[in-house]
Length: 229
Image (cartoon, rainbow, N blue to C red):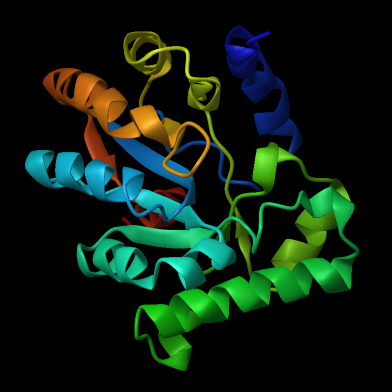
């Protein structure tokens, strides 16, 4: 069973209930953030990068520490191309299944792995602060802990449910139908759903560009929300 039609409804309910998360950018600006979860992947991620480079746009990648360790060259390629990098946990264990000390260890470990892999100094590594919980599952207690640990929780507003592999045209049409000013689109470039990632973005990116939207990183949306841009 696919739940794609329910995600816009969930967003409308959860967005005002948990304002500490970044669910979307300003609706007054044509900025859109394209994000990818569950990578890096030695094939899917590189295919996505080719599409992004062709259209000269930047995206944000929420990584699993385990896969950054396994595919460091892919991770470095993403970073060197100027895309945003962020944390999805070490091994996709849901945050609600860990005690807070375990969760902090998972996040800190993944942050350190990304920093070392990308050749960052400690101050730059500490700026890898954006975190998206696996499966989008969190609690108010977890959100409070993330803020206490100086991490920034990031969620979504457009979820085409690509991990169920509904087909490239269906996933892309969901993005095209739901995208608005400030949208945060979540796709997957990992082992589950990543097979269609490059073809899906190649389908909808030119159409969104034709509509006047501009693709920015998650960090730019945070700056916008804080009045820094």
